[in-house]
Image (cartoon, rainbow, N blue to C red; front, side, top):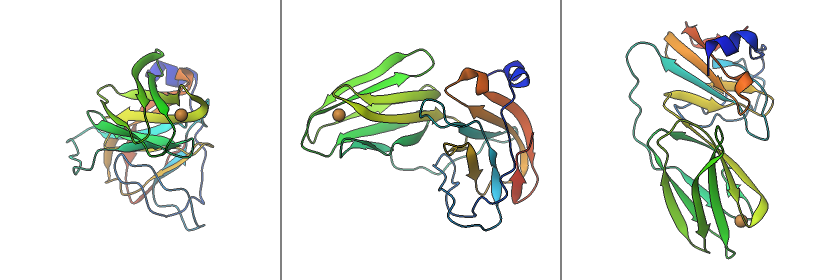
Length: 210
Ligand SMILES: [Cu+2]
């Protein structure tokens, strides 16, 4: 994630004026999809589209005082109906994810760090089985089941207090970002589409433009 890379291959930021003012946008939570044509609020724009079924991640880190996030329950990823649920999961650095199997067939959880294809977890989840894994390294993780090739999920681990998955077409919105100076980071499975730059949030509605 280098700025020189950003200069040679800038992400395509496009105005998206009709993104909904729906819920979501809590720190390190998935944003909700648009549901109406209300004027956009919060911090929004368009990041690179999904690559290999993995959506881009949009992150804001304040350059001043650190933001203290309220504690939350450990995130969970379940195996049910031959699918991982949720299919995308945003995790704070240091959090432990609880992987469960809620159906009556055996599964497997294979978690691979996408930047070097190293396997960080390979666990056979028997029916009603479960395992925990602590994620201490920032980045993207591809989740698969060795028994069912169609089962896939994606985990992103971040230290940013404000972060969201973009939609597959790249559109994103994070609500309730306080005004101030931030570093905006965009992450994609494709390293050429990653970028980082300084950004000022000046009001209740901030659109990211080129
Ligand atoms: Cu499976």
